[in-house]
Structures are given as structure tokens and as C-alpha cells.
Length: 106
Length: 106
Image 1 (cartoon, rainbow over the protein chains, first blue to last red):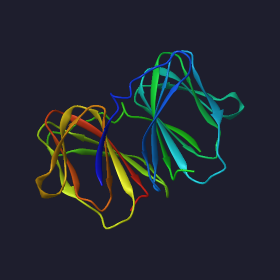
Image 2 (cartoon, rainbow over the protein chains, first blue to last red):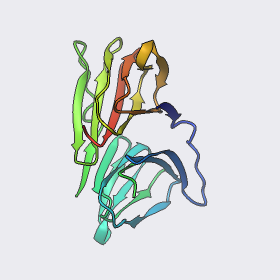
Image 3 (tube, rainbow over the protein chains, first blue to last red):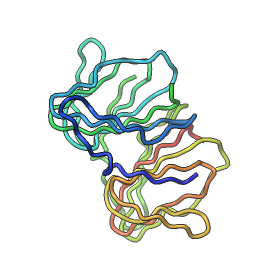
């Protein structure tokens, strides 16, 4: 299994709601690209599952969101690591692209 | 656990050998940034372990390498998915940065 995907092909924004692209799914990890237009929010959520996820900012700026109103500045090149069962979300200040890797998929 | 890392802080090249930065390690996944100067090669290798890895090109261009001399063009935004036990490597044509995620770590 050797497969190439292109993140440039999923560079699509929608002013009505964030765009979601599934890039890979296996028993080991799931990889998704979310594109948020400026002002859009990936609401804070969590899943009752063991494991961790990474949220990598591909371009743009905004905030990583957490529980109790926590907000951490997020810009291109930032990588957030968090447990799957911990509340997490993202707010876009500019058009914002993130790559999310979930291990293992829940 | 909510932790932020910055890929801009690990943007370091060394003309003598590729640079390796461990960004995260847990039972679920390991995340590394490798920076190859133009001309450097991450030799083809594999590990006798179950699981998969992704190789994301952050910047630059080159080739993903596989078994039997296989070479797949690699440029910024490309994401290669492969089994941990399958031969894989990278050649840098320009200065090249990659983000490698291994699930689970071997």
C-alpha cells in the first residue's frame, strides 16, 4: 500500500459551512482536511474514545478552542495535540485550512 | 492533554545530513519533522511492524522512494500513505521539509 494524495486538490472553501475531505481511513489512523472560511467555527466537541489527534494548521490563522472557553492562537505551521476525549475545536479568523489526524479512528 | 507545537521553530537545515525533530510521541502516534537539504536522501527502509505512516511534504520538492527503485514525484501539499513494513524513503531536489506521522509507533 503506497498511495499519494494532494492537499492542493482539496483546497475548497464554502462560505456557508466548513468543507470536510476524508483523505485516509484505516484501523490505524484517519486523516481529514477541513477548510473553514473566515469567521467559521468548528464547534468544540469530544468523543468518548481512547486515542489522540493532531490538528495542523496548513494556512491561515485563528484559534484552537478547548473547554471552558479556552482559546489558543493558531497560525500556519502550528500543530495541536490533544486526547480524543478532550474538548477541542477551531475558530477561523482568516480562511483557514487544517489537517486532522486521528489515531486510532473512533 | 492539549499541547501546541510550532513547525516554524524546527525549520532548520544542515548541509551535512538531514535534520530530525521529534514533535510528539505517544502509544497512539509519533510525529516527526525531517528537513532535507537539496540533494539529500532519506534512504529507503522499512520496519517489521504493523501500522501505517503518512509523509506530508511541507515545502520543497523531490521524490517519494519505494522498493525496486520506485520514485513518485513529491511536492508541497503531497501526502504519501504507506504501511510501516513497506519500503519507503524520500529524495530532496530542493530543500525539503516533511512531516511524518507513524501510527502506532513501532
